[in-house]
Image (cartoon, rainbow, N blue to C red; front, side):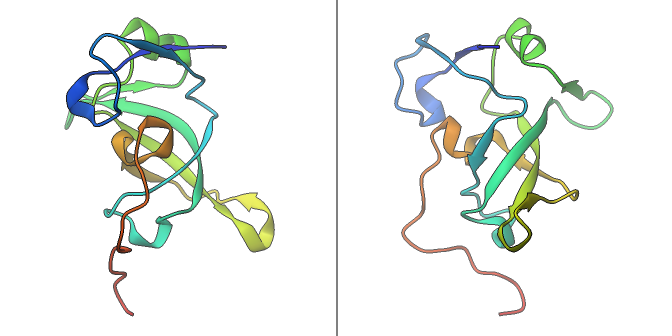
Length: 120
């Protein structure tokens, strides 16, 4: 299924405000380039669901059509992702919540310097 995602200039995606691009989100593989989970930096991840809101006011999207009906991915949305374990050739069953804007499919790029990892 294809999804129409409206992106805005301030998201850093390099798209003109209101331009639409089409992509599959739920079940898509992408790369994580955020600093909140330094152990996953540069890892291939699988998007399981997308969340919007905070506290008791969270909407959970488990299908692309739900995201589309809610106006597409927003800069404040976050995703539940599973990292790929290369040595076992599978995705982890453990998931992490990440900012959608830290995912390559939404415009995130590798940083010049890698984030610090605790315990190194």
